[in-house]
Image 1 (cartoon, helix red, strand yellow):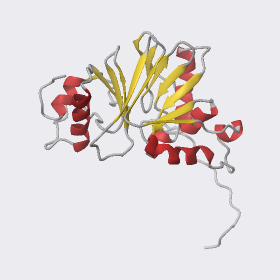
Image 2 (image 1 turned 45 degrees about the horizontal axis):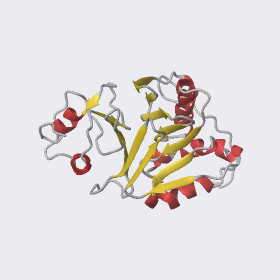
Image 3 (image 1 turned 90 degrees about the horizontal axis):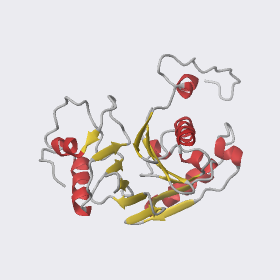
Image 4 (image 1 turned 180 degrees about the horizontal axis):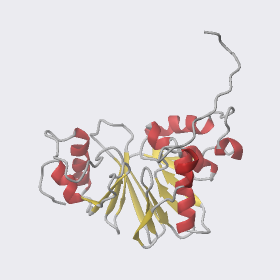
Length: 251
C-alpha cells in the first residue's frame, strides 16, 4: 500500500432505479390527504401542511437529494409560501440526513429535546470537500425542542406532536397526529410488510409500543403514514396495525 497517491476515480453511471441523477430526475408522487395536507412519496414518506402564512413539513429524511425532492414537491403543491418548520421524528441518520437541506431553506427543525445536541452538530459541522446546500447558504441552524407534547396550529390546520414512551427504538422518538384528518405519521414503530404477509408471533415490541401510545393518548386514528412507506403504496389503516399485533381494531 502507498498512502496519499494521486488517483482519478469516476463514480459508476446510474443504472435502472439505482439513484444518482436518474433518481433525482424521477417524478415525485404525492397524494392529497385533505385540503392543504399532502403526502409526499417517492422515498421515505413526508407530509406537507399548508398553514396560513407558511408550510410545515413532517420529516426531512434520507439525504440532500431526497430532502430536495420533498422541498421541490412541497413548493409545487403549496406555492409562494416559506417552509417555516420541519419536524424530525428522531435522530437516526436515515431520518435526519435531509435536515441540513431544510436548514438551508431557512426552516426551523422541531425535534425532541434529547436530540438537540446531535441536530446542532449536524447543522454546524463543516462540509468542505463537497459543500452541500447548507454550506453554500452559510446559514446557522434553527432548532426548536419539545418534551411530551407540542401543538402547531394556524386556527385551521392542527398538528399534534407527541413523544412516544416505552419504545426501545429511540429515546427521542416523536409521532405526528393530525386530528381533523385522523392521520398519524410515525417512524420505525410499524414498518409495513407485504399485504399478504403473516403477522409475527410474538409481535414486534416497537409495534406494540405504538399501539400502547395510541391508546394512552386516546388518539382517534383512521390512517397511518409510516415514514417507511409500504412498497405497494397501499393505504395503511388502524385495522391493519391492530391485525399486525394480533388484536381486534379499537380506538
